[in-house]
Length: 140
Image: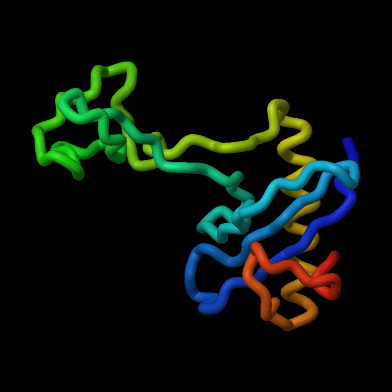
């Protein structure tokens, strides 16, 4: 699988941990959007797009965020999720939508995304477009 395009969208406020979003195209036919570039104490890394986990209310079946104690729809007290389903920490509240299967491909993808991010930073310009509003001049 070949990475055929990477678009990077810098975020304003460089003092924050979230530095940019990236959109990666594979083989000119498959796109993954909202890959995050995050800066931590150990350096920059990429985080794959994810969504917050939800659990159904036993009374009204409304989908509530993981860790909620009461239903956001009917107000009923929610049962504690069992040990297998209950998130151990805040990171477990989210599940990747798409992610690399092998360590080697994850490292390859992360290196490419971080290289594109560094190129965009070196250009010294923040993209005027939102991640969903792509322009041809933002292609790296």
